[in-house]
Image 1: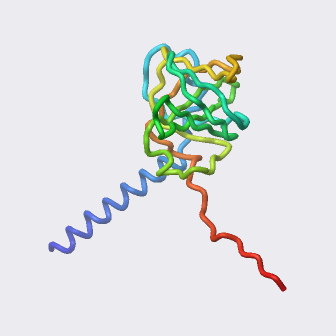
Image 2 (image 1 turned 90 degrees about the vertical axis):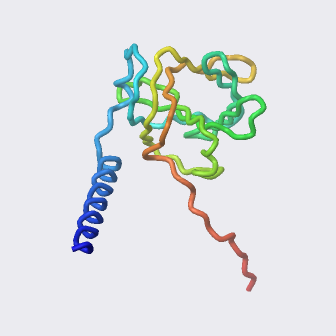
Length: 174
């Protein structure tokens, strides 16, 4: 009897894990454009197309706090003054062209995704959208490149993962 109860619990847990996985990876997420015009702070799970930020050093300002931003194509790494650990930054574009800056301001980004993560053309994030928060990306000389609403990411659900590690290449002489 005890074995049967254990089996039922194990099957239930497996079923719930499968439902959770299916919800995350096969769901139709809200487009980031749905945040346009929202006037209250809300939790949001949204998808957006990643915008290429180019490559090089920029300045990111969020609510008056400045970060050094290393643009790396489809993502960037933002360093707060005095902090050795970066936050990850994505520009997410909705179907109607509306763009938000999404920032993953947790110390574990590099540990989770590596120093050179693979970022897909579409990213899905779970976080907090605060319409009172504004981000500005500028050149080091102060030229404003763009102003954005902000999503503070709690979890990256889809579209960013650790690069696959490979053995170093070896040259063979003949």
